[in-house]
Image 1 (tube, helix red, strand yellow):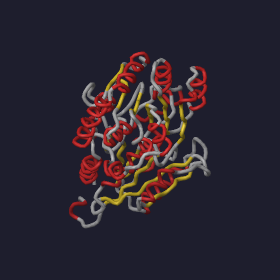
Image 2 (image 1 turned 90 degrees about the vertical axis):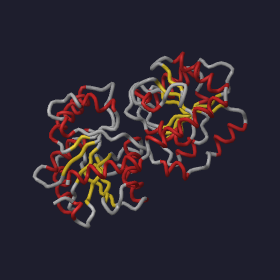
Image 3 (image 1 turned 180 degrees about the vertical axis):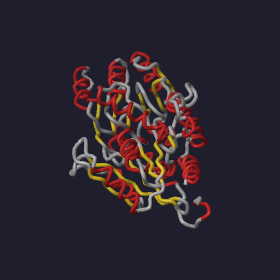
Image 4 (image 1 turned 135 degrees about the horizontal axis):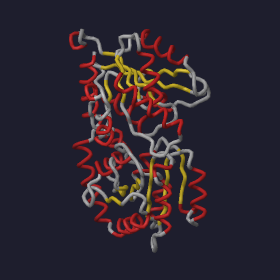
Length: 376
């Protein structure tokens, strides 16, 4: 029986990563906040590789009033988690399991076999540079997709290659990414350290996200080294395995004193609002949440001209794009942005209108609600 014929909301388990609060994790939080609780009851779960592993996604979900659950899978390969997940699905009467990334996709697929629970995967992007092991996992993930009840990529760049997989087109859906505009509209403060720097005439550039190679932060460092006659400072909000390498690069380029590695910060929006420009020099993206947040916050953007970024940023209208890996071009654009406050204001105003019209989490959640209901 369709849930539309009953008065009870359906139970949906969002199965995410315990690793941090980055794009995909914040995407989950934005989605569950905007789903109608009369139609959908959301639970947030993570699979822990280590019993001492922190679970920021669950902690944030709990703050929002949602139930959470941690599935213990000590070690990289632990098949007991499949049994744990299956038992949880049956005991909690989970109608939809919504998974994110290859690990939860594969474990979720196995756990839902023999249950009435439907499984949906939302791919958030693929790795560009990977070792053989990761390549195998991501290839296996795509092989599993045709056997899921729905696969819902969040950008055309992710959708188009998946549409070519035999047997997948019938369960492939496209729901455009969205950002939690309410969270951004409620924030108004600026980090005091950044505010002081701005008052002292510093031009503040910022980045929020993981410190990993595909984000192209080495290009940004080289570009800033080449900028002349500009008193700039760069704030990096986030953490990742590339931190030591980037610190060494900053020292090598003799710009380390201008670069601030702030680590993961829950008050990231206070930093964002203090940036004169947000820079995303990525080599590969899905639809970057950090760009949508910057647009909604009225912060002008410089980004690499790649799919995902150029889906959001209309060059010379809602921001400026540069050729990927071209640090010389990026350097010139940084200087151009720093010179004209009017240009920055124009881009910021246009970008805010664009993201409000096309990329709200409320619109995204409504489309997911309809998909959930159609599946059950």
